[in-house]
Image (cartoon, rainbow, N blue to C red; front, side, top):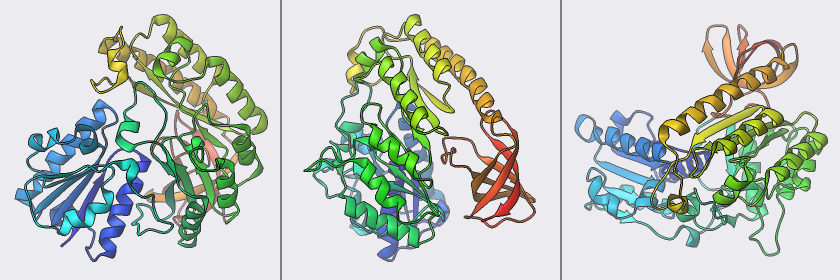
Length: 441
């Protein structure tokens, strides 16, 4: 019996998917990348915003077709979609045999091999579940890069966010568990470890006694000088000088700061439940650039939040102009009745929100192009990932994160994958770099 799994959503979801596949493969079920060959199909879903929910449902319906055209006999839906919509989803998706919430990933073997029952739904409390073991079975999606989840859940109360409801309060893994997993991954030729959590820089606040993220970074960076360590999902409130100084002190920790700010209007930030101001953000980014001269800044912002005025939007645009982020992602506010922000007045028409999105993305594309141009003529270590075609490879520099940033195209006749090579940048676009190989390391 072969297993096929579709993983949707964020990097944290991908780790859950890899863990589920690892359990199943270890138990004897072979994995296939072709859903037509699979006896059991699993979809690990996302429902963070409306578009993610729609993608999850569309994927479920697409995979359900293989019950008729393939050999599929069991369809399992896991993750955030069943956790958010709970038992009411059962009648809406009769094609599905098992629903597993975010606290039920450990039940995947039972769902695969258990007796067939009509649409069983398992929704245990995510917070009550044990954290990941030191070295759990895991089928990695990449031969050279791995996400390392250091905590589960989130204890903040952003009014637009459903994550605490889906994942529970923050629960940090013990340092020794994280370091043991990092050592194991590095011993298996992983070249880049990316630390993730819902609120990564709040790591350890829930431990007794409290523990700081900088200790995690130092312990992992000390394992090998030949492995990149990257940090994602930093929070402006919990990113302190200890972490910034640690990034500055270790050459193998990527000087890449991913800090979703959501907005720059103090009035909007307060309504969002983000307990900082634009002045705090200015000071934070100034500190990063003063302590880490080659720091690369990435952020995520939201437009169209209820009550966002033209003045608020102008404050955001001005902030983006002044900080000049190397990478910036923009979301349009996604409303839902189960969000506190739904009750706020002044909901923005979709057309207005889309126009604000387009104008901000256009502004950022110009900033990104100017930022990229400064790389022309410089040489960087690039992690080579794929061969696009003859004499053309793709990879990433330390300032390019998988999936969310651009890539580096490398002109070379022959180049080993999953290795670092020195590349001189010869040309750029708004998001990508082009270069030529100098030497291999």
